[in-house]
Length: 221
Length: 271
Ligand SMILES: Nc1ncnc2c1ncn2[C@@H]1O[C@H](COP(=O)(O)OP(=O)(O)OP(=O)(O)O)[C@@H](O)[C@H]1O
Ligand SMILES: [Mg+2]
Image (cartoon, rainbow over all chains, first blue to last red; front, side, top):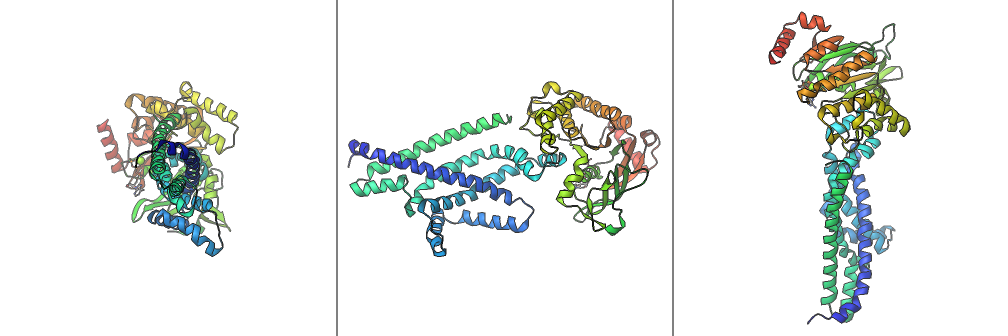
């Protein structure tokens, strides 16, 4: 079997179209994870014990069970309790929750590396806890978290093919469908590989650039 | 430990102190840092705390800034309880909301400045006035610039802390604290992290505050000369207690306690 350029040209538009879905799934899932992860991280630092313990256990659970199980769980077990979700919605909830758990650890590390004196200075000028986080702690913690956050952006992107198990029409699903229809898998799967490689390399470079930019912008030379 | 009901709900009378520590106790687990501390500071008074390392000096300031909770007694500021709040006619430990209001009359400068690194000098000084006092940005900027001029830092107002020397950072930190218009200022070894040649620029600012403003101040320092020059009263701490307190003239010339004598001669020998 050798490479068929004409076949490649025929299937490329459909695969690039599916790439948009993959990017959207990764982007949406990441946005959910980024916000929810911050909520998890801050919740674990409140003085309210029942909340911190519950969130810590939840994060632990999400991190130690497979993503694919969580996707199946939200999609197939939900309806048994009357919560029927479309593949997209179920997939975004599952992947968002899963990565929120990982990102919360990244944020936690960032927050913990802000010196204690910063918190004390905030008390001394009488900022509220919310102001302390928003104005002083997070602007210092987030730049420290950018590298870790970037790694998970690439991971979440590489995990989007798992959404094909519940029928989300992303890149992997499209390639498999094309292969099945034409009895040729070499070109579609190779293209998928190249697309993932290009986007991963591009993201890694952008994240490094962004990290440098944010440090400069915040005056942390 | 005595019941909270034996403490007054507020201090009244002709001479209400600006700060009163009343039978204050501070422990970490089994370790007693301060036991039964009683200390009054009059309005406008400058009190300096000296003493060996570990004697509890920093702890006294941190309790007053509400950075530490206390395990016994009550602290009053301007006649009102700080660590406690009145409830049904007795004092109970203050909740977060009460603390926030109560600590608004206190400002503090730290040994390591603790400026906000992602903000310029000016922004550091505007943060509290805008966020906490609700000043407009314009008013806050005016106030911040006035204070930065006072501490001689107006030329550097747009610099981030990383670009400033230790002495410059500490002067900005003083301006940041003053921008909140506190009644009581706390200084914890504000010159200890500085190179010897820039200590003067910070002590001059504090000296200025003493002569030109009617602030009440509580300061911890290892610089005996500075303490002698500007203090109304000096408290020598030893083992979590006030071993001796007096005017600087008396305390340095005629220390009564053996421990004070030993400490002062040890410090003199080191100088
Ligand atoms: N968080 C803490 N946990 C346990 N012990 C503490 C804590 N903070 C302070 N201490 C102890 O309390 C005592 C008083 O500490 P403090 O910092 O008030 O001393 P200090 O007089 O300021 O000393 P220095 O001159 O070294 O700054 C010390 O023995 C110290 O080890
Ligand atoms: Mg100290």
